[in-house]
Length: 84
Image (cartoon, rainbow, N blue to C red):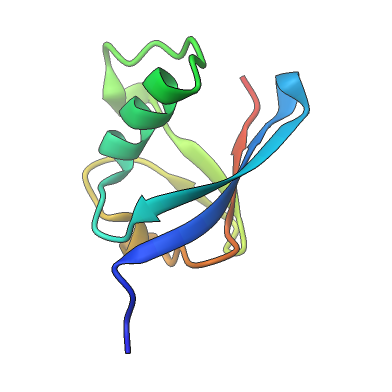
């Protein structure tokens, strides 16, 4: 049975903030970047999304583009690191 939601950990290093986030499994990386940027006021420049990416652990990956997060293997317990 597959779930249509993923519980991931968002770690914003500059703020030393870790928070669980509930995200749809079919969201694209670009949509997630925009949503996180707006929701957490990260101040990322999203005018050129080809230069934007997310760093994850569990699995270790660089996520970018219009692929869904599950195509990269993102699953429950994945940590999304925001280091900028």
